[in-house]
Image (cartoon, rainbow, N blue to C red; front, top):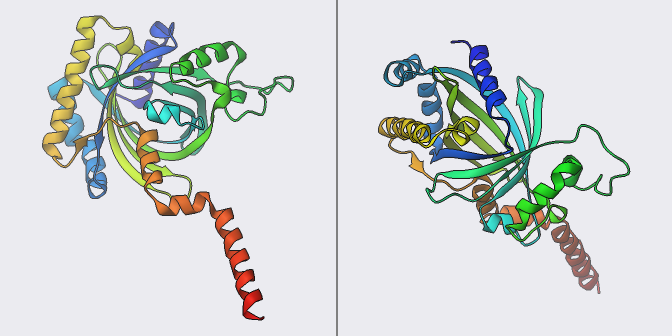
Length: 292
């Protein structure tokens, strides 16, 4: 099965299910030790694993590598961080070319500890000079007709779009296996190498086993259970092969924010101008009194 065919299946599912902007995202997030990342990706794209998907699960798979840049927003009180919600402006690149940009809002985990809701907003294609929010970090991307919906969603976290500012900027190298069954796109296996784009450039790697969110959202209860069963089996196969993997459903924003908060280098970089100022003042004061 060619990659083009897999994408056609995905597009077909989009045509059928695109009525709703809010979707249910069901995925397992597995932490990957640094020393295991290379071996894991080698295995995922190996013919042995791809053939196992065909024979045991009756699905086809294609391999792709993409790059993402994500700017995560929050307010001064870090309300989204404390609720484990995520609001990001995402840019997607394939073969070095920008292919898509959008804004995504992800809510905290649902009761099952795996699924969460996601709302996507297409960005504005042009700038309106008469728009009072034309220069706002976030609102400049949001179409006027979508702003009420976004504010309604953010109100659940005691915030609003106007209060948002960039908090964390990440780069991701995303190695992905697209999986499709006889009906449509079914799931993806994604190995994400995540990097903070601000000094000191913290990194982590995680593996996501995600069901196709559009299909999952609009499926019957029985179909949802079947899809969840597939993902559970897939997780068990990978944990059996790589027992050092561990389930960690912490969102990327929270995970990187925790690394930043724990780093004195990040703190020093944040207050670098004040540090330089005090060094200059201190040095000048020392020289002044030394010469007296």
